[in-house]
Length: 167
Ligand SMILES: [Zn+2]
Image: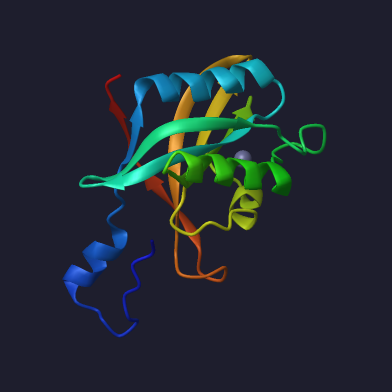
């Protein structure tokens, strides 16, 4: 899923291609569900996965799977989907002809901005990482970040537009 442009290629076109982030297409009902999950687990972090498929207009999110935060009772801003649960999610995706396109988690009483921990623990290059702020139990701003780069060394989060689709 990563577009790898050569280091020596410095044409303007290559630069544009490198910085263009496709939108995350998300049905309103799924955005609502994701935000509701954050409200339900507040003041703890929620987490889950986004399943979708690749269509003519790019990745389309079809469903989301709520996961248990394996680190909910540890330090602030920690979330982890247990490996066994991630395997189950991957199996469900395959059954439905979908792929894991991204992940989401909440920031209780903290802005929807990725943290150094979030970046360090994000390993799916090309996946979308959605973060929703939950302020005093109420979902606030929700933002998406595309994990860009070609390796663990140069990975970074690029702001990604959330494009709401009907249904
Ligand atoms: Zn976070």
